[in-house]
Amino acid sequence: MEYIDLHAHMVSRTTDDYERMALSGCLALTEPAFWAGYDRRSVDVFADYFDRLTDFEPKRAALYGIQHYTWLCLNPKEGEDRELTQQVLDIIPEFLDKPNVLGIGEIGLNRVTRNELATFQDHVDLAVAHDQLIHIHTPHLEDKYKGTKTIVDALVADGRVQPGRVMVDHAEEHTLPMILERGFWTGITLYPTTKTSPGRAVDMVERYGSERICVASACDWGPSDPLAVPRFILEMRRRGHGEEFIRKIVLENPAAFLGQSPKFQLPHARAASVVG
Ligand SMILES: [Zn+2]
Image 1: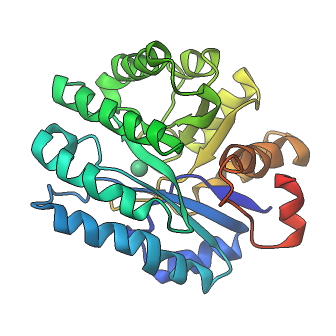
Image 2 (image 1 turned 180 degrees about the vertical axis):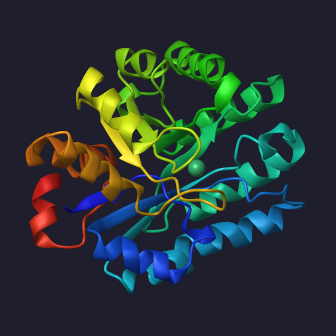
């Protein structure tokens, strides 16, 4: 089945992974800027990273017919450094006009500190000033509920951001309702051994339906699987869900959310009908 992977860190992945994703039906993916596994020492390293996300990765994806899009930011973990944050925020606008940049992300919180919150707010200001879509990372494990609540409360109180233009990702059973009730889009990221499994994601869809819900592989440098979305599709079929219902979650929903950016398009005519 054709699908869009809404969250894939391809800089951590080999070209073989692009090929396997293409073979399994991936039409397009979006790659949020994230933590590299170590703290970067200067703004120049971010400029190089943004270059890679806006130049090298779309070319690599195109070799397999996959449309590559990206989101730019300084991630929540390094956002603790307010001086570096300011320097990175200053260079992001230079990249916003690149054809594959859909918006600001993945911004959010990690340990839910005061500095992280200030950095989050700076990125929201940037998105509002440049009319960008927003992709949000919510913390993992014990910080998830508190962090997600802090983020959605801050956005609602801010009032300038339309919830329908925001994707709140890494949702789990206990955070999904608060995200959807406020009108945001939500993403469930799938992992092979840690965090949410494809089976748990199917449980959530069975409970909450398909409205404004997407799934993604996250596939980064940790234990993760670039074929997590096809595995979700398999699990949905195994439980007897119809093709139309599955297609809405893996293709039509992400196309509707991403299609709010005039830059977003799918690689061929059959899929293009989805974005109208
Ligand atoms: Zn991520």
